Image 1 (spheres, rainbow, N blue to C red):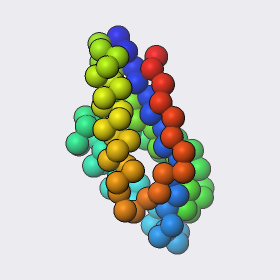
Image 2 (image 1 turned 180 degrees about the vertical axis):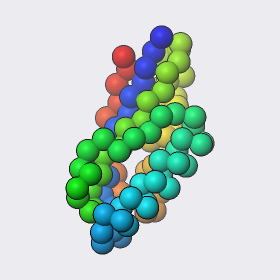
Image 3 (image 1 turned 90 degrees about the vertical axis):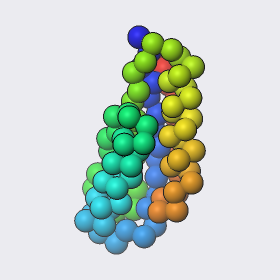
Length: 93
């Protein structure tokens, strides 16, 4: 069993409150979950308006498949206009 984990540090320039941030992140997490069938959660910076960290996990039997899914998620997030990726990381367990 392979567990792929991706994390993204995001800048949310349009958010002026925690309510704005929650709205943007909820939409992002829901779209990623529906499109790629992965688990997604906000993992850091819950108290900051314009900064967030999200993590995505995929479980599979093939390392290449886990890497392909995380690459697709990475490309999807990079191409969103509502957030800017500051940093990202990927690991396989």
